[in-house]
Image (cartoon, rainbow, N blue to C red):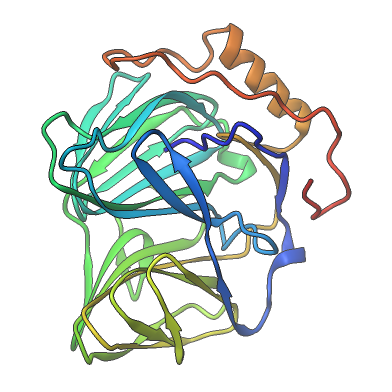
Length: 321
């Protein structure tokens, strides 16, 4: 999914300056962003004061939206570099096309994982004949320096491992949870998991004390470490936890995101992750005038033009303009 913000700011993320080394309960409110004509997303990362969780650098939650008489998601071809996109659905379908020639319909509880590496472009759309409701999350994982120029590739995994307990089913989307390993390729120690809780269930989820964590509320009513989380909100949990108490009031859906704190500083702008603003400007120019990002074939419409990169240089470490 694209960041369609026409006033996109250069944002410094990563480094240990933002990491909380102890357990905390920091509730993050979303920023509402329009994505095309009929989709509004709730953007949780990057957030004011909280840029990343491990290598997770971007989180959008959308729906449930009734799109029976709407076109649904319509995101024209756009570029990415230096990151992985993770598409995750609870309802509906999304058709993925990319400049490698990939064509894949992603359905609920299936992993669509695109590794941009040095450069890729893609589009996302609701199929013309689509389900009534669309509900899901789009997430980005920043690639560490040793892998950020890897050859781009796309993976689709319909069968993912489960971690279960009484009233809890945890689908391991990416990385590792309680010994279960996702088949999706991860380039740093992390976890992304979909947590389905039955009404009145209570569970203790095992965690890695060296990871920092956050929980995104997708649906229902639940308490995370005693804190009520409503759909579309995210609870940042810091580091130093060996387990996480969960309690559901109703059937509830959550997403657990975590990983080793991302030590490198990165620069995020529009749909790019780089290390300097000069690198970002070069990538924008390549998208607008060259063929570095390839061509998405088969999408019915024009590709996205990039906004202008802000002219003012980045400020001091950890600051955002």
